[in-house]
Image (spheres, helix red, strand yellow):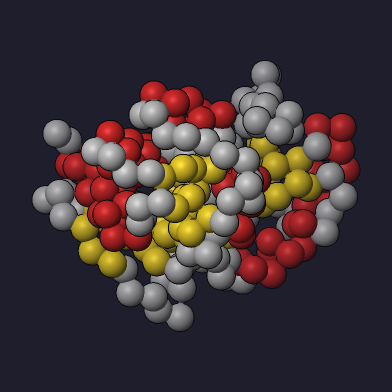
Length: 229
């Protein structure tokens, strides 16, 4: 098993075993680290536990079906805990998410969950957000306006429509812009400004949402990350 894969597996399995209880509804994220949380939930269901899930993407629904995890709609049941990955994690646990294009549904599930747990490897830990381009989900019709308004905030910003020639279409039928802001020193403020632009559905900034961060390491162990800031 490769070291990065070992870390992702350790993070996903540890989060499920620590935070998921029998007879509960949970949120399950999208991506390569969240995959191992899904896998672990499937193992526990196979062993006789009763757990249902709210999926954050069509891909996660497919994985849940493979693992025989019953899927319910958002807030059909109270979500005890949501487990998801991240593209970047700052010391204060502000996050960049959306590399897989599922940011809107991921944020909806995180907001509805009583507890939001991030699973990641050390490569996702950064001193400040910004090196990874910020995904912004937009209504396709409004793209020229959205680009103009974002550039009014930072004229030299690089904005790339994901997919370029063939746009990346989200599960909601929207497009993703990847915005290279550089270092983001006030994530919550930037998220608020972006959400105020007509045509922006959601940004990939998740500030003040994470309750726990589980970091999986190369030796297949995992630790709980302390929060700073």
